[in-house]
Image 1 (spheres, rainbow, N blue to C red):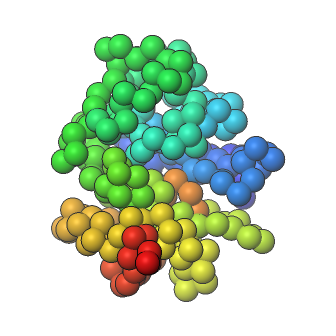
Image 2 (spheres, helix red, strand yellow):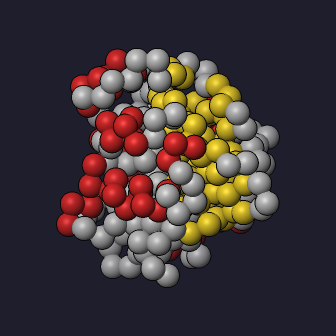
Image 3 (cartoon, helix red, strand yellow):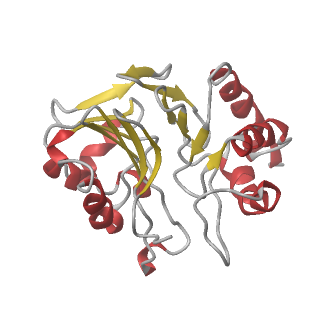
Length: 246
């Protein structure tokens, strides 16, 4: 596949869930990021649109599917620069978008030089619903103010940094060999998740959700049985983060 090109993960006559391509620039080495666009009945919802260096590619791919003025929501999982670094550009180029972020991080966003008065919604710790999208609390997985976004229409779960993989020799968009893929994920998850308790609390939050696809902000996408394997793998992790400190 052409890595700069978007890839439609789900599509029917009223709804699309789209992966927005990949950058291979030197600026992105070691921290390749995934951005996603949901188009529902002509309205756009952008998930973790990324940092400054990926903005041009993300913007161009978004415009293949819709006019930027039809983006109604830009949703952030947490505060890292590879998530929010392009915010000041989107403020101008998506003039009708409302920005959603954890209430814990809202006060830091003005430091990016963006005027957000009247355009930002603080997501409370317990989460909220934005049209057909549910903001699922995933605190300390890895950020202390962290949310995942569940597309209730397509049954796709955007997991932010959860599911991150550090590719070495070969990049791929979809996980095929789960056991091999674990080797690319384990070190990140053991370091960046705060504790086993954080995993257990998150697992209770997603109980009962019908999840067909897990789409992370880094790494590869889990479909079908591999999505179930990923959740079970997290359930079985014994020690992470503070559990490993002495």
